[in-house]
Image (cartoon, rainbow, N blue to C red):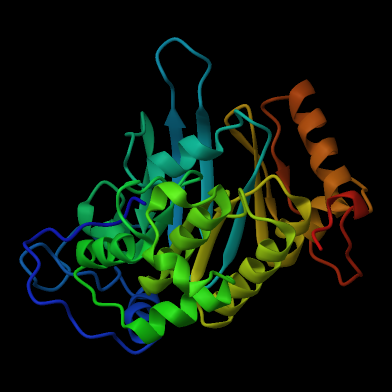
Length: 319
């Protein structure tokens, strides 16, 4: 798993912080000029004061093109409030992974800006506020599960107690005896669970998850959804990509729907259904994509919210 690295040589691992201390300070500071993230010299934040202050994430006019191919992202404007859960949806090739790669500075944007708690995403210290799980978590096959967690903790200059590790794994129904096995013996689902546990253990204010349900069986999906709901209740900011309407309906406060690199809709799942006159999220998703295909420059503004019952397609429900 790719994580934010310390910018100086780590010293003695710190003791486990209180469960909310690590991210509570950052979220609280997001309402001021910039988030309280340390500089490389250990001093207070001396970086640029961002016009995006007050947001956990802010993307303004983001564009990305790979060579002569069709643009991957076109003028994407999107904000995420602290404590909000945003689902990024779209068909394959819509630009979801490219958007995350730009957010994490794995690839530079051609135009526009991205900030993380008010800090320019191109600055390494911006990534100290987030934990990241790729769609395919691929640790060294020669390490055991326990060694993998220890390595990831050291990269964060953290120490995760056995009790915390056991609790995180239990939340995902991960058998503790599997920690002694080499990663090459893990199934895809087991590997994904370990990566998710490591992301949660980092105690970051922002979790960015690319297809977190990938490879999980229905029971594991249910347990993971419960973990993410608990993190939401604790005030963490969650951003995840998904193709599953049931996961989006259950977890997301808002959904950002991309198609052909353009943001076609941003609003609540209920608002997406209202916009397209659909009775379930799956039908609304299809209608939005079809409309975008006929008019790729269109962007549907979310209508005013109204109170109503909301359901998703029974064909997409996870059990």
